[in-house]
Figure (cartoon, rainbow, N blue to C red):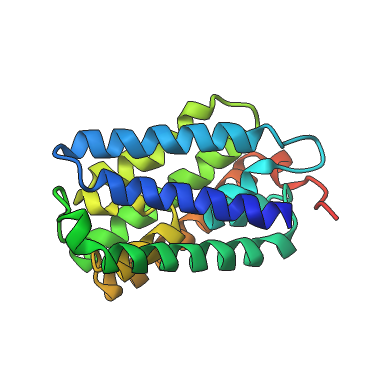
Length: 214
């Protein structure tokens, strides 16, 4: 229960940060704001990591998938985190859509093509996998800003949430991303994360030989 509550809070914080950042006047400021939030949240989550497992699995479904592949979290925890954050994301997106008139228009949203969205999300997924495993292995937490920077800088800034599938669902529900783009982003980011995980496992076999937590 603690894990799901923490995952819900992480998902809500990232989603709210992205929705707020997209109302900034400067795309660079928007990406930087989201990156700061993600770094802080990841730092808190990392405090729960130990030899038996990683605390980073609550930060997002991509991270949970990556950590499960290499045995640093239980497969049974991935789906509940995914479902919890998806529900939270859709709820926040629906709220943002309902309050659109009161909140005012977004200022730095672009319209990505399906091809661009897919390429950016795939790159973000691979990078998210590498960064997650690096941070779990005691690399600087600031590295988690890299997927955010790529997501928001390689295409229209509305893709800044591509590293977090629940946030992408929120953007779709809020009417900021077309649902076909949402589907492409979630699918290719997930595929990229899987590829990134197995790449690390192949190049560094020890990363994939941890005993799976009970």
